Length: 368
Image 1 (cartoon, rainbow, N blue to C red):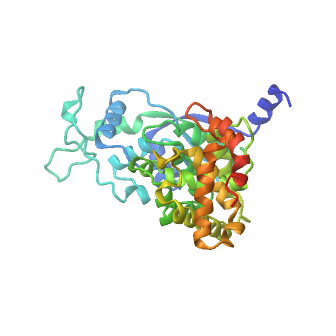
Image 2 (image 1 turned 120 degrees about the horizontal axis):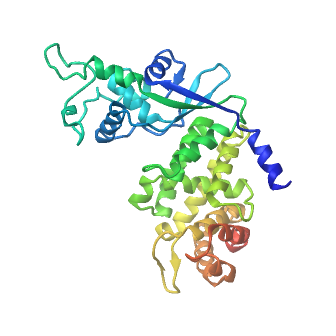
Image 3 (image 1 turned 90 degrees about the vertical axis):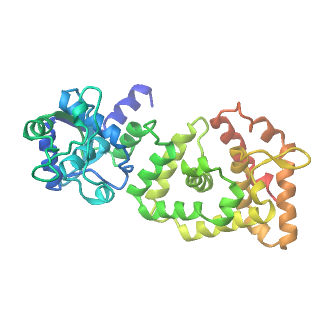
């Protein structure tokens, strides 16, 4: 298939529409449940009061705001894909925010700004009849009349289009990592699958063996490592494919596979990391320098050792505990004498090259 043919085929998968609406109209749609702004795949409502105030100030001053993106389902209901922070801020201000997003959201009290210092302490309506801290009717009307363009992804689009759009719009956003985007999508596709990933990431042997830093835990790296482990075993890696694109595709395929036996996969996962923790503990994925295991967690080691041990569970399970530990430690050390591994595991090696060359050697490298 030529590039032009691929472009034509891909464009057929996305059916869009769009027009401008006032925020008042959008609020009405939300209140009548014709607009869902907190679908499961959305990230948390987490702007601080300063960012919320700056957004409200932009509305008051008539500064154009970016479009919001929605997915229209077969019933005509809109599901927000991008714009949660903006719309949630308006709804928190007006007191209309509901559902999960509203649990920890108290009435929004604005701060003063450089242009509008008198906004300090203002809210949508007076806190009591004589307070004088409400915005007042003229400014309420200005905010509700502010217009925003709504880009609509129609239900005729390919089933994966809304997740693809969500990813494109949110990757690179403030504080949102690639894995956070994948987690959000996983929740929407198959909440049980997402819960499975989270449970495995909390497995004691796994957390000990991977020895993750506080920063890694905060960025949800553990969940990504679980996904990588499952993906490398179940979804063939296509050489040249961007690693994150491969993980995105694998996530969608795995989460959509209702025949995937998560019970069996859990048993393999648990046994793999029990064996690794038993043999190497927190050194499981650290460099062997000829005398000791040292340094930080290496992804290249994880990809080979974890997948390799999982591939050899039948053989390893037949050994005594002491012989199994010895076999795993010996294989982990010997890996550093493997030319294919040493040539393709350094910091300068692209992820695409690393995966295409290291995954095929995993089973043999860790064979007892």
